[in-house]
Image (cartoon, rainbow, N blue to C red; front, side, top):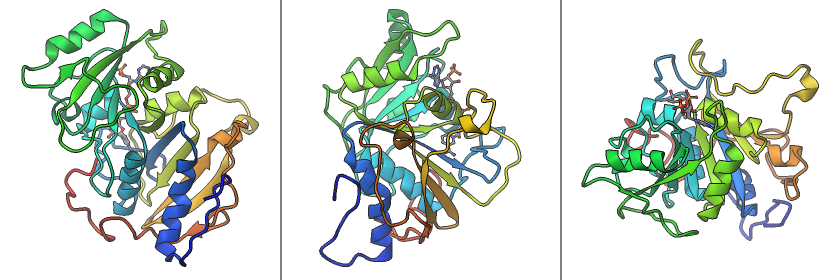
Length: 306
Ligand SMILES: NC(=O)c1ccc[n+]([C@@H]2O[C@H](COP(=O)([O-])OP(=O)(O)OC[C@H]3O[C@@H](n4cnc5c(N)ncnc54)[C@H](OP(=O)(O)O)[C@@H]3O)[C@@H](O)[C@H]2O)c1
């Protein structure tokens, strides 16, 4: 692989292998990476008003999501997603290590029964507003046999498999609005050695990171369905003219019935190293992804892919 993101292989890769390399190799170029994602309907929804989101996009896109998890140090979600989905945020549809789970829960509204705090599949960090009061609240709610508080891994280490879970509370000063600055969250995670981050959702969380201009890459998978109501993938600060809209370099990939837009926001910001280069797939729609540890079709556990 070249610094531009272009790559060569000693053997001729299949079309499916080529697409995997085209899509994921650029993500390996950066030691520090913030990638955000959304799986949305044609009308830009990520769930119904009742919070039902299983599943907006199809199996090939769910594998993309699990691959992203396997390629990062930590996956970040908002309290709304944990409350609605009780996700595990682990890697199950492809091979790879589980990332550290990070839940932004400024008011501490989630209780310790959520899977990420109990299942032991990987460490979990709860990002709260304020200081010791928040940490004390988390500790008070932890069951005796549940997660340990303040037991995060040393900086730079990752945990995979079924080792014991740890719930570390990270307190961040909040703005008067109650908002935690995404840059402060990133700083706190990087201080703990988590430099490659996936902002998985939901829409509120991803939008705050986008508004803060800290996202390097954005994956938007669009599924051919219309939900018609429910939370939007993005709700950004208002702009006046389309000149102010995000219009980054874009690569397009076909994932089963879904279409993935792979947007290079780092390049749009003029960040050094943001350019990905002239990769295959840049000019048109690449073929359906069919590789991975499972073949095309329903995942092994269709009841719980998130
Ligand atoms: N299709 C997909 O790709 C996808 C992915 C993930 C989730 N989802 C769906 O999305 C829905 C939830 O999305 P959502 O947008 O409503 O919620 P969300 O983004 O999951 O969570 C939003 C909440 O997280 C907290 N939060 C996040 N960032 C914050 C910040 N910078 N500062 C302070 N607080 C912050 C706030 O908690 P408080 O409310 O406590 O203040 C905020 O209201 C669910 O139905 C889920 O199924 C879909």
